[in-house]
Length: 427
Image (cartoon, rainbow, N blue to C red):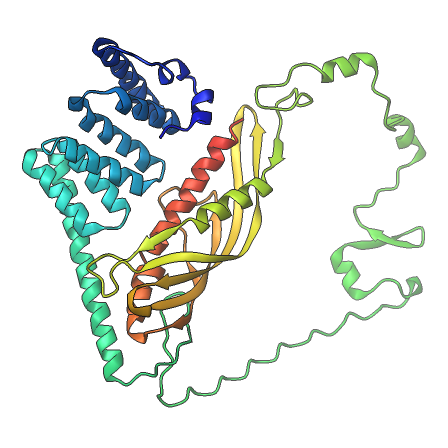
């Protein structure tokens, strides 16, 4: 359903509010909506494209539905709404089971949802319909490799769980891990006592020299101090002579006259404040907005374990944002806009599945900043499992929470926040 508020603000309001009453007028409107939709996609104006395709679907004939739903799936995917992208692609394949691009879009949406096996099935159906499509062949090969990697990881996880059970590991429900592995508490021999840390040497304090009333120490000479008129000051201190003062003249602040005020009031470059006539560095704080919007996106992040895992459809969510420290600002200099942000994130997560399966923990992402390119991913540190109802699923947690799955979903949420930050604060 179209958002009426968005529609009111859209530059395409004329066609979005159109109400054709004949088949010919409906066909012409759909053609116009498709044309504008393609242009919006090309400009990456995703909300406009979404409104245009949704409007087209309300008046399009049956033979147009598959194409329009496929295009809408593409838009949803680029907006980060992967479940909506999947639903739109499925409607496209229902409308026309022989429409190659519908299956292609379905495969892409399922891949974004980390449902690799289902994505491969959809892509194979597209390949059957268009066997000579090189891009599709490459995508099928890529997805087949991903499915095999997932299966191998599942086998390794099952083997690790079986080994843990065979070794009689304790069912203690708390464990702490470092950034590279999950460590379970066992009934084995106690760990050796930690070696005492060496005591740091204490540097002797500096001693005072004779003279200068005891105010000049040995270290002061190294640090660059000197005595001027009986007072200790820096070597950079410069006493002006009367002749130098006369040459410099009066440098006290002056009142701005009318001509100067008019110059200051002259138009500033686009995107800069009125006073910034020269277009030099100008920065606006956006930290409050950034914190609120980033927290919202993180709390909405979820991941469901694949059906092929030992805990099918178990869901991982963010239960609490423990800490979000940092800043965000938008700067303008010499006609260019710079988006500056740097945050430290600490959050708590939980996993819940069938038969009372529960697990919770926390971790940190210390570097959310502009040095990380979109799609590059954000590193997890201090990964900890606080409690787990079944120790046999620890390998799964490492695979689907720590190293993939939920971690990838968080990466996508943060990347989408970066995109929103740049879009909302264009200057």
